[in-house]
Image 1 (cartoon, rainbow, N blue to C red):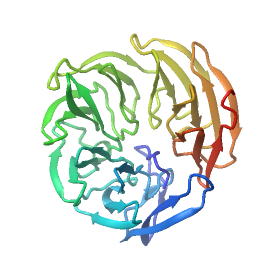
Image 2 (cartoon, rainbow, N blue to C red):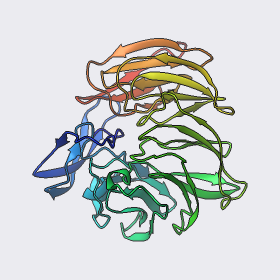
Image 3 (cartoon, rainbow, N blue to C red):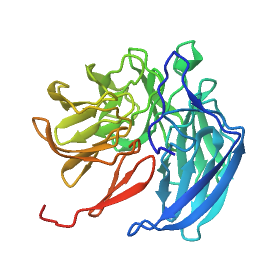
Image 4 (cartoon, rainbow, N blue to C red):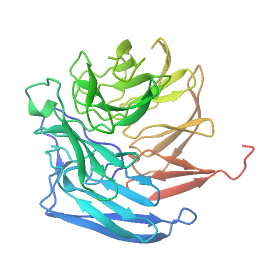
Length: 358
């Protein structure tokens, strides 16, 4: 799968990838040399829902808790893998929905629960599974009023558990609304309407100092800054909106006192996180689906043309280098120790920083 970039929710008919049957697998790859250590078949699905050409059958990113890997493939099902034994622990396909464009929402772990979104064109809800058994613990339907068009009810967002007033709150972006839930029970604590049509939400929210930054994705994309708290049940207040070149798929990145945005069309923007005012904008070029990361004090972000940009955070656009993989980058990179792992549509690469003084 692409591990991250779900599809847009456009009005025009979109190209689809169709398969008679799909087998879902989990690979264990040696970080040192790239050798495949395990290739585990999880389950198969006949006549799966088609996916958008920019999506895949396995775009959601898995999560690891203790020595277990949790893979969530939307309507196709959820699986738990014992990493040490390289064996399947459980498989659940009780959470059904019509994605329209394939799965895109990644799961999160909170204590003994695996929580994920099921925002389809037909049903919209959040669900928590017991991470040990795969059994459903709670399910909460979306309560906010949405557009009558089913295409504008679907979403591909990933939740985030954050602390508000000393209590954990599940931030859950969906079509037209940002919800706050009690992660233990699924009880809705509050919801905030974006104020504009917002659906097919892809970017994950980011939070610092109890301020959440949310992209509304389609159609007229805006970045919202919302003040959370002072208690977990307090209705958040919108502090500011930013409307120019806001990404529909890549998530925002917070570095120091700035918010960095990389739009789908290759425009980079640096905002003051307090005021929402733009410090600079610049064109990188290309089409972006993956989200940026911060590693070793630098920003790394790749585009679908295969270019990986290395950018120095600051008060101006400072591109330190640009590497061309000549293969599409749709997954966000990952940094571990002195290595950067980059997945393209053809392969996975490990890039090592050999000189710590560089």
